[in-house]
Length: 320
Image (tube, rainbow, N blue to C red; front, side):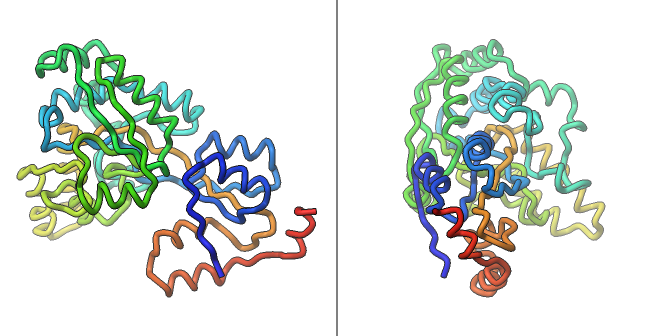
């Protein structure tokens, strides 16, 4: 039997992991993993190449976020290289993302190194220009807003972003919700009226190309940024009409560039994540990610769980 525990407090969960009261813990961030390594070096740490990119998603259908200058200002307010260096301790790439995670999907998308310099400048840290953009958009003193934050996300990172926004006059109140409440409030009822933040977003995808192109389609189920852009919607039809792989790659590349230029959401970075497991768990290779997502339903659940087990004798030696 596998028992899933929902523990909203990360510190409580980490302490239970240290005490051997939890066998496996997923979605562990870099600093948490390093802390565990110091106190419990026996706990196995499995690095998970994380996709998609962490984002801040504004409602594009409500002021002030209907104005691209506001969304651009929010992007320019954030120092991505500094976050990569200091928050992630140099463990991640410092460049922003668009629809496709080109690091993991070579040849599909619009790699950052191919961006023209003028587009790269729109993602560069420039608080002075960000303030001017806000003023030009009619917000010379900034504005107040709120973000609905899934507590599964990196709250420390969100606090850093909050400080960057404050520097250009955007006062962002953080409204934390546990994952279940977030899902009901944002995904089911669509009650969010400003910004949303959770561990994953619509950028940096590794899905099949046709699915990637739906991320900002009008009315799409997970289009929480509430984008309604006919020009973007047209990419799906273009993709369906392609006859060769090269043609499909070109459509996906164009869709990626369009998203990068429109700033529908604010791109942060693609972080590292770790899955932790106790030394008495054998045959485990981070299958928990497939288990909690329910990939393939019951058949996949039994497939993965049949491949790891608990060494109860070893467990007793650690719990004496």
